Image (tube, rainbow, N blue to C red; front, side):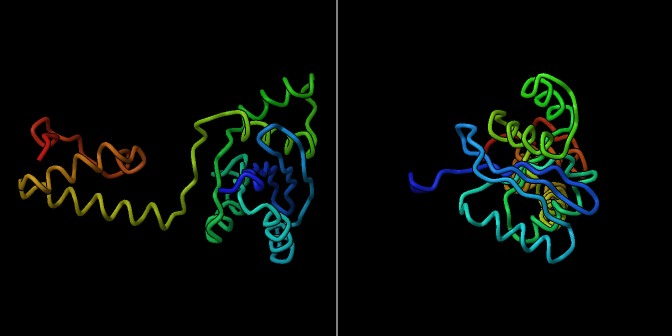
Length: 181
């Protein structure tokens, strides 16, 4: 990345038929603000607006809830998205504004602040990526049952590298499965 094009965070407050976004730099300078509909035309306008900043990350509140429909479209367009928990943005709104009044503008601002200030927000992956990971883990588990050292290490790798897949498909590894090759 070049120094003249810094990474920006685009905070999004999603609703069923519209989204409010705020674009913020790493030093918390607001450099853009807009509201778009979530129909095809509005979504395309939003993407065009966001692409003014080539190095951006979307911070979306409720990626698995009210923001799911927009998040999945962003992921399909290969846009980087992080999930901002609603409780975290509500706390940020209280601290940033001094009061808890909710408006779409203050919500988008709070979400962008969380995206800039908080390290370790969970990146959102598409359902297709999760399906590929599930298939890899399922194959690795089946291979591990053959008790070859290579397949056992593959199970160990899958177990240690993906908490999402581990919760869904991986059995607990046996102590002898995790030995190095």
